[in-house]
Structure formats: C-alpha cells, structure tokens
Length: 75
Figure: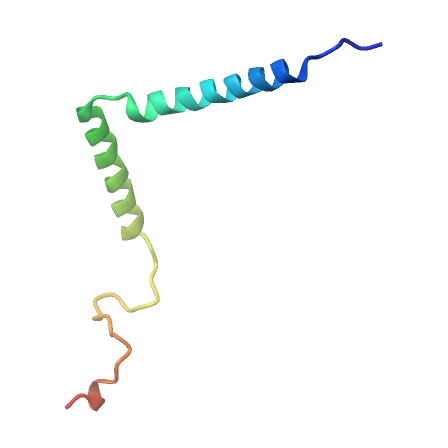
C-alpha cells in the first residue's frame, strides 16, 4: 500500500514552489539598477535595429512607400 498524502498540503507545497519560481523571475526582471535596465534596453534596441537592417522587403530599395492611392486620381 502507498503512502497517505494530504492533498491540501501537497497543493500548498506546489503553489509555494510556483510562487518562488515567479519571484525569482521578478527579481531578475525588476531588481536591477536603473543603469542596468537602460543598458539592457539599449542593447535590445540595437539588436532590433540590426535585425531590421538585414530584413529583405517586398519594396525596391529607395522607393517611396505608397499609401495604396492612385497618384493619377489626385486633383
């Protein structure tokens, strides 16, 4: 026969473990100095700009974007 388990205690233990895991993530995300947050934001923005710079688009390089409006229909 197996060991008797108190489900209430098991549920509380599981919830505490989940809360501790979430708290660790919050400490990493929010427990940094303003300068560290600014540095990581700048690094993220730089990486995003580099990625956008390497993106292949549908339009021809240097061609102005159109709004979908026919230029001949303007008066």
